[in-house]
Length: 198
Image (cartoon, rainbow, N blue to C red):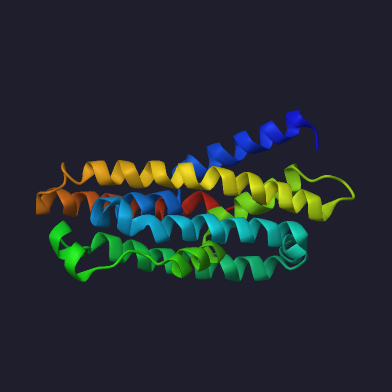
């Protein structure tokens, strides 16, 4: 893979990682409701889970969904159902103090496993592996593509969590926080729409 292609891949990985989507909506909400420190396992779970997913798809899992499109449809329905449940939980989150005491952010394992039911993650992983494939070198291709997303994940997720944490001061009022959480839930649901028709 040439330097130009690697730079293009890194740019693609960063832009798609930092753009709004299910993961970034949830880490933004986590930053607001739990702060940066308590959201760290969530951030690392996204990075590790998605990097592993990209590598596995690059090593051949993606072709299964190409050969069996009904299986991909089942995955999209399961992912959409789970994301609707998460949107419900975000919309009904309590005040910040109450969340700090009683609630808990997504764990490392939950965030890692979430990637497998996240439609945007599937579309990105399949697209990246297909676009930046080195002909005849599937293992090297998969590792390079996964590495690019591993590098892009941490700064992207951190940006959204820090932004959420900074919003905490503005959302100290229970009514304002409720509006924010409902807005985040609606955005999470809306982020599904284009992906479900892909």
